[in-house]
Amino acid sequence: KVETANSSEKLARGLGGRNSLCDKCGMLFEFSEKGRRSFWMKGMRFNLDIIWIDGDEIVYIIRNVSYNSSETITPEVKADRVLEVNAGISDRLNIEAGDMIEF
Image (cartoon, rainbow, N blue to C red):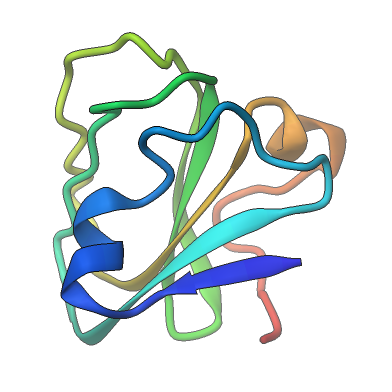
């Protein structure tokens, strides 16, 4: 189950302020055009895997980002979608850059 963040308010807030995310849930950030998308953990209360997607292809993954990280993550790749899921999901499902994703 994936919640979509496609308004400026949802894109800015993301999962910040929530206490948890169900095991089979995520948040999909959708952008109108491809670009280098930066993410941070402001207001987060749990760790995440963050997956950058270009079209239907996973182009970058950062695993187990700590909820208290102050780092801004900006991969060198362009993407039009970014998916946030609970930390460990990418490893558990063997998700890798280059994998195709279907929406």
